[in-house]
Length: 176
Image (cartoon, rainbow, N blue to C red; front, side, top):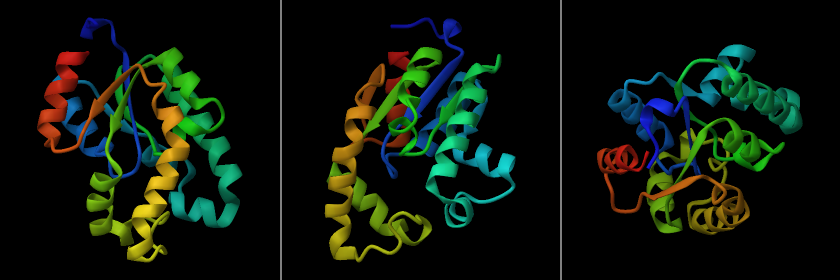
C-alpha cells in the first residue's frame, strides 16, 4: 500500500469503455486531487477534436502530440488523476513514461463487459462507429489482445466486471 500523500499523479488506463473517465472523476472527488483527461487536454491545446486531428493530420501526428502532452502533464509539478486514451500506453514508450513518473492503474474489463457498454454508445466512438454490431465483439477482442500487454505493465490492476464505478473507486482508494 502506498501513502496517498506521496502520490503526485495517478494514471488510469484501459480499453475504451472500461470506465476510465467515470472512475477518474469519482476518484478525483474522493481524493481531492485535480482531474485531467488527456484527450480533453489535447483537444484544448490543439483547438481541434481528436477525430478532426486524425482526419486532417493523421494518426502519426496525433501520436506525436499525445506523447508531447502526456510528457508535459507528467512532468508538471501539480498532483492529478490523469485519464488517458485506450491507445495511449501502446505508443511512443508511453507506458514506460507513465510508470516512471506516476502511479499507473489498469482498469481491466472482459470482452463481454466492454461489448455490453460499447454497443450502447457506438455512435459516439469514432474508432468503432463504422463497425457493424455483429462484428463489434470480435473487433474488441482482437484490439484488446493487441493492447493488453501494455496495459498489464501498470503498477496496479483493478477488475471492473460487475462492479459499480463507486465500488471501483473504493477498491482503488484502498489499494493506493
